[in-house]
Figure: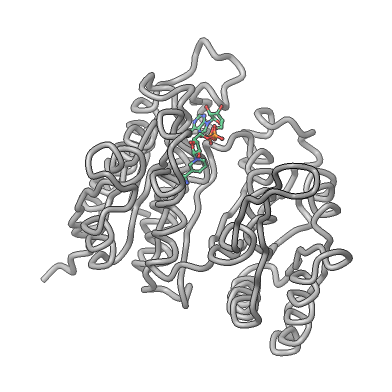
Length: 364
Ligand code: NAD
């Protein structure tokens, strides 16, 4: 009997439904090519869930995700909900779903496709050979610490607290070392240990467990320096591990190395990144309200997120390779959505790009 894989599909807001529709075409094509069987269940999340259910993360959505083998997420948010109270903001749902599903690491590969070097704002010779992975801690740090507003000596003040414990640092660091072992065996741990106490604990913890991974070359890089080095020598990085907010910022910076944020996939994982592990897969970009509903969105980040899902959760490496090869082929042939096109007048729509990638998928 065919092994049926359950995928919770959360389209979300803005361009979310547009790019997820293209990723679903890829799932269908993989079923045809390889005889896989996917059972997809759609769930409401983010702004649309606030409108229809009064909360960004309805219980029903969480239940669907928990009973699935993997989650495919588009994007959430938009100006309509920007002035809502904290509980009624789509982003609160994002933080909540990661916590509720025990997802503490966010893996963001940034690979520069040769044919897209011209779409980047950096010089081609600087980008040559860039293939890095940002491993971002997802459930701790300043995004989750206590927040408050108060009256101070000089008027109203706001406080955000950054907290990390050793367990949180150790589990993400071990995962990053293990990922580095499977790649080029280089790990850059990024912190701000010259100023922040959480960063000093981070660095101590990384140094304490580093001897368990003697085959991995470790360097510590201060976050401000890392931001600069990513633009100066991106190809020298292999795996970068860092805390929540630094990872959020650095991975968007890394996204631009690839030419567009519309190219970058991500996986959010729990205790394991071994084949068969539960994960949530989503493009790095947001809901792009400025281009939503116009068929302008690049679906490649979401399609490559399906490849990551195949690799990490389902152990369907062959199909993951087929998706990545199809994306490379279509780009090599010169097809572009507007965000990566030099000549915007020839740009493809979201669904045209999705269709071309599906058509290019071949069994090896
Ligand atoms: P964004 O990533 O949505 O957009 C930034 C810029 O990149 C925009 O100009 C947009 O048009 C462009 N862009 C993004 N994805 C693209 C794609 N696939 N193809 C072509 N162009 C693309 O970031 P933002 O504007 O800061 O945020 C918009 C909304 O998205 C906000 O409400 C924010 O909170 C939310 N957001 C959600 C997520 C998520 O769901 N994980 C992540 C980031 C931002």
